[in-house]
Image (cartoon, rainbow, N blue to C red; front, side, top):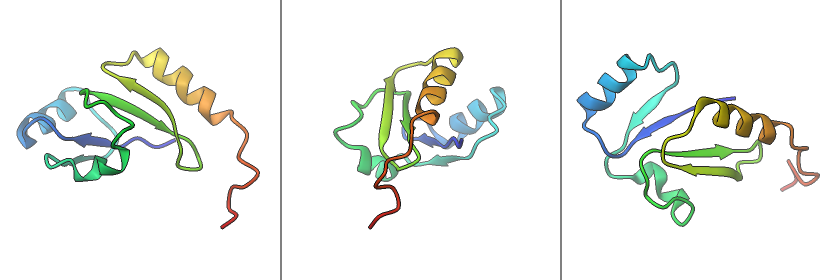
Length: 92
């Protein structure tokens, strides 16, 4: 399981202060132009924060717009991780 934060809204200083305050232990990138999220257009509605759960094949398996509770996030991740891999996975 991996996490990546993408900051598209706050200043770099505010984003770093958030990471320190909440002791984030996952990487985060500063992307005010939104280039990193272009591939998700049509999938997310522009809410901040938005949580995307990506399955092992790279498919968006879940979207939560707005704040998410820890237990909800863990349950969603658990559900996605228990899904069987696609029989086509790895086939070009």
